[in-house]
Structures are given as structure tokens and as C-alpha cells.
Length: 331
Image 1 (cartoon, helix red, strand yellow):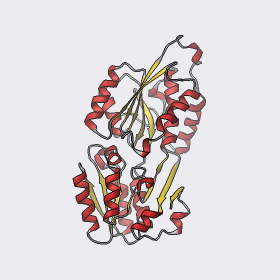
Image 2 (cartoon, helix red, strand yellow; image 1 turned 135 degrees about the vertical axis):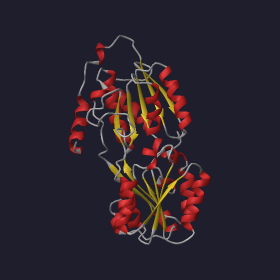
Image 3 (cartoon, helix red, strand yellow; image 1 turned 30 degrees about the vertical axis):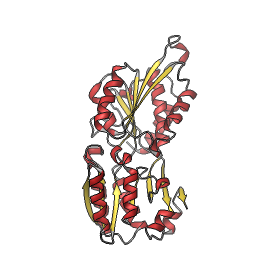
Image 4 (cartoon, helix red, strand yellow; image 1 turned 180 degrees about the vertical axis):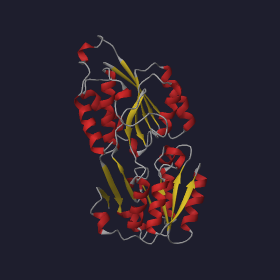
């Protein structure tokens, strides 16, 4: 299905109502579980819940009045996600909102009946959450955050901002990355061939393994780093940024490496947009819509962020092509 068709469907979600809120049982409080795969202190998480609550309020749902939000943060820990998923399902929610693939997978293991709306999941079909994007077919639907072609896009941006790179590692945690880290690899490797860059597949499970990989990249000039988007990497973002800058290794990702914390360049979808869309789906399902029939949506709004201070630290001269496209520049 073409992207513009998904956008049209989402536009319809903004106005579609199955029945008026007034027809709901008087005094009934609907319970919404929220399982966030990230660390609560992550920059990507800042403002998301207020944004979600505000949109729900505008749709007629007010916490303490007709909804209750049970929020849990897993901080990128898969075992914790599983425990929290079990806990949330046991509360008997009317619906659960999940962020990240591992968090959604944990909930998928616990229930096939409670409606689940996911955000920041890259490959819901491959993960077995939905039968297809157009018609999910079961109790899960939601919003894709990253398409597989972004692996190549990140490498292209890295080569553009640091033309001298000759070898680039793509780093991920197989336990938390989409498809165990394989989701972005085909586009990354294709871009590496076209750019004459040596690709290095780098699975890691700890900060010690991260440090080893980045140290090796920095031992000689010409090393670069692409960091996949997953919960583990988000939790350890500060360590990755610190090591990359210490060893003079240019690194690119999505908001996994936030520029306001010293990351060099980020490119990816706007998380707020996905959560605003998720609020619309939450509203529709609480009013009676079937998640099996609500199409999975793809990202439509992307942003690029650049930190010029980090670029100077790394000895990079930023080309005008990057500067003119950046949506946010830290000087």
C-alpha cells in the first residue's frame, strides 16, 4: 500500500467516531495500560506522555474522570518488559499502549484478546504482531517508526558529513533490535557498496562491548559508526556518545543519539506525531473500533538534527547540503 493512502486513512481516524462518548456507561472509568520500552529519562521520552494525555483530553478522555493510565517504564531491559507486560495484563485493562518492538512482543506473549496499540515498532509483520499492514487481523495495530531503508540513509548522511570515512560499523543489541539487528542491514550494506565503504556488523550486549567496538574504530582514521534504533541503545546513549566523541568517531542514528546530549547527527521520524496518532487509535478502540481492522500507519514526518559543537570536536567541516536540510542546529 502506498504511503499517501496510509496518510489518508490516518486522516480519517482523526474524525471517525463509532459512537458518542455520552452513550458510555455513566461513571465508567476505562483502564489504559502503557508499557514504555525506553528509560523514563531518555530525551526521546520527554513530553510524550503529556502529549498523549492532552490529545486524549481533547478527544473526551480525562484521567481520573473516565480513564485511568497505568504507566510502566522498562528502560530497555527485556526481562523487565516481560514482567511488566504480565503485570499490566493482570490489571484487566481495556487497552494497552506499547512502545518499542520488545515491549510489544512481551505483551503479545501475554494476551491475544486485550487490544494493543504500538508505537516505535519497525517491522510488525516480521515480528508476527499483525498479518498485514492494511489489515492487522488480531488484537494489535499501531504506528511504524522506522523503515528498513533508513539503515542506508544513516550511512549516506554519515558519508556526507564525514567524507573521509572508509569503514563503518553498524551497532545493535540482537536482543532488542528489530529482527535481531537484521532489519536495517540490507540497506546499510547496499549503501556501503555504493559509497565504497567497508561495512562492519557489530552486535553488542553491554557497555564493555560497546567500548571495545568504538575503541577499535577510533584506532585509525576513517572509522565511522551507525547506531540502530533500539531500547538498549537508547538506555546507553550517553555512553555511546561519550565514547564516539572521545575516540573521534563520527556517529549517526535517529533520536537514539540525541544531538542535545552531544550526538553529532540524528535523522528519523518525529515521535510526537506517532503518539498523537496513537491517541486517535486509542480513542477509536475505546469507542468500539476493532484493532484488527485499523491499518498500521507508516511515518510521514522526519527531522534532521545537527550538533555543530560536536562536529568541531571531531574536526569535521559541515557541508552546506547538511546545514540547509537540518531542522535543528545546536551551535
